[in-house]
Each structure stands twice: as structure tokens, then as C-alpha cells.
Length: 430
Image (cartoon, rainbow, N blue to C red; front, side, top):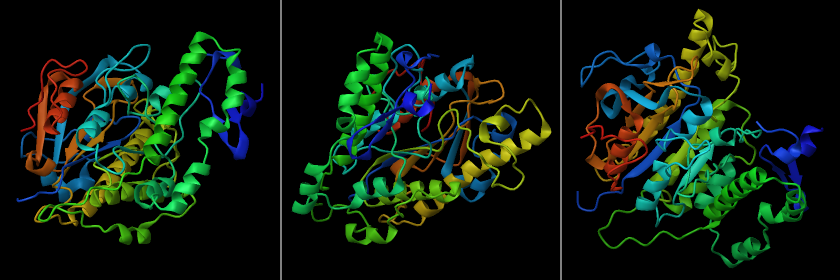
């Protein structure tokens, strides 16, 4: 059967919508301080743990080969080791979906992700309550679950925006003018555009297919509603903190209409949008999927790399592949370093934007070669408005539940929970 016909719905206005993998298609398988912001940067395919884990604990630790780009930010990070995500041996799908949820979503209901819960706590009055960005389209054919790390309470994955220009415009452009409102009324949801075709397809669907389609469409609808819900930020009272980036200054930062072909430019454009959104207080929660959980992004543009990310993660202890794996992982950390550099330079009344933020960076998988959930790579950047003591390597007890760490992050961000996921306690981040 033709792949395009099998996996696409075409509708009016040139809309082409990819479908999840379905049975009916043939296969299954100090005064007023600035607010605290929260960010997530998900790195796919794990790491080789010896190249990630720092030497030494507490304040006296030495950065590992992968973490060396952060040498100038040694005092601004908190590395947490010995966390167990899911089980000792799992797979990309489960480990990705459990990264922010504590338990996976494969065949069961899990928690809403911590970024979603934190957005409900601190992002409700923001122009975009929860900014979600990504660099790769979802993989169909049964792999949607590892295409994203954000989930709501109804077990529905929350899709990321992939186009920097679209994300930027909905973050900063004025959609409240009469002309903008008129254009908005003329716009049709991409789901409305393919509705008739999807109804026809639904006649042949099994219960499994209908569940998948409902989940997929709900995620897209939620993304559209979130991005189209433009709320004018409340006017600050005299003496209150105000965003230091005026809305009328943002157009000079507007990305080009085309998605960059260069992987580094693409990633950095999305990171810049995260920074700008937080700086202007248009969003207080942002999540970046640096690749989906089964990413096969080609990194041959990096010196010393000849393979894609997934191939290097299954290195089979081959020295060349291990070296390539290390280079790719370090490239992802370099993107975090760039973000921290810029956030450090933004002053917010005696504290930097980085001081007023908490950024969770890491992967749901530790050893990509064996799909291991043991000792996953995780670090926190920033001081969360003074609530975080940084410049530490926290070495927890062996196989401490990753849910304990997630619960501690929730509490640090003001979300009051006693349990989360598989938690058996908390990790001391004080």
C-alpha cells in the first residue's frame, strides 16, 4: 500500500495531516522580585554513563567529558546521579514518556508531566501558559508515545510546535487588533479541514484505532487552542517587577519563515524563543524536545561523527561509536551552555534570568546501548529565584526512584504534592 495514502489525511486549504499508525491501515505494532520560570530540555538516546557522571560529590566535583562545556557555569548547576527511571532494562518509548511523569504511558494511565503541572501553578496568567517546542515531527507507526515528554491529566500527549516563526509569532505578535481578529475568524483548524475525511475513515476503525485517533486529535486541538489563546499580560502595578524586554522590541528577533536546514541553527532558534518568552514574561514554562525519543538525526556535520544519533547510542562498546556518541551528547550540552550564557547576561533587578529560573536538562535513558533506566543523566541549571543551592553533584542512594527527584522539583516550584509517580520519598535539593 502506498505510504503517503496510508499515513496522511488531506483536506481543504492544502492541509495534509499525518496519522498515527492504525490497524485499519494494515499494520499494528528583593522588593518585587521577577517571577521564577521553569524550563525543560530533553536529550534523546541517553549517554554512556562514564562519560557523563562527574568525579567527586558535593561542591568538590569535576565535570565529565560530556559536561565540560559547562565549566564556566560550574557554580550554576546541580547534577543528580543514581536515579532509576522505570526499570533497569526498558525501551525508548517507556523511558521517554516517563521522563517527566515518573511512570510510562504504554498501556496504562500515568501522571501528568511536571512541566504541565508547574504551568498550571505559575503559568496561568502568561500569554502562553506552557510553551512546548520540538525539532522533529512525531514518529507514527506506534511510536507517538516517545515523540514527546509532556502529558496532561487525561493521559493525552501535549504536542510541541516545530516551526520557530509560528512559535515566535504566537508568543509576541498582536492578535487582538480588529484585523487580527477578523483573520483569526477566517482561519480553520487543521482538524476541521480534514474532518470529513477522518469521519469516512472512522467507519473502518477498531476500538484501538478510535482511541489512538481521539488521543492524536485531542493533542492537536489542544496545541491549536493553546497557541491561539493570546492573553494580554496584566499591567504591573507601580513598584512591581516588569519584563525588561518591551513587546515592541521583539520584531528584530523574529525568525525567518523557513525552518533552518542547519541543525544547530534550528535548535538555537528554538532556544532563543524560550529565552525571549521568559525574558518578556510571555511564558513562564517552556519545554524543548531536542529530538524525539527514537531520534535518528544525522550528526555527520560534527567533526569526528559519521553516524546518526540512534546508531551511535547502540555502540556495542565499539571505540569509534563511543567517541561519536560522546561528541553528540556534548553538542547537546553545548546548546544548554549557550542558553545559560544568554540568560546570565539578562539582568532582572540584581538577579539574572538564569538566577530566576530552574532548567531541567537530561534524558530518560542512561545507557543507550542496553536501553537502561539505571543512573539516567539529569541536571538542574539556575537557582529558582534563590530557592536552589547550586554548584553541586548530588549522589543519591543507588537506584533512587526518578519520581523522587521529580516530586522534589515540583515542590521546589511550588506545586504541593506528597507523592508522584513511583515516588518513595524526595531528593534533598535544598
